[in-house]
Image 1 (cartoon, rainbow, N blue to C red):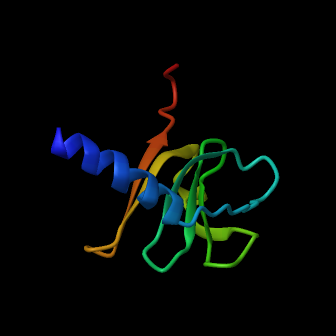
Image 2 (cartoon, helix red, strand yellow):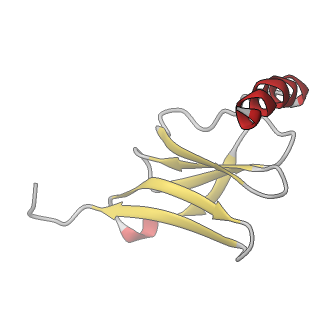
Length: 102
């Protein structure tokens, strides 16, 4: 019962004290953003389901710029991105079309 009361008292205070934020970022036309991740420095990275590019907007920017361009590899797209701060790694799930398959 004590835990329930503590949760009832502290949870609303925690929710009310956290600052909500909104961000709007655009990328090139028809880029088809499919996935999004945030970097430890406040940047935003977008994977594209319709182009062979990954886009990045630094903190405070509203226009994402090409960060990685894999167009030299042929028909490819990115179906997932994850910024891993502790290892300073951007994980990306790249899907590449194989000629002659459906």
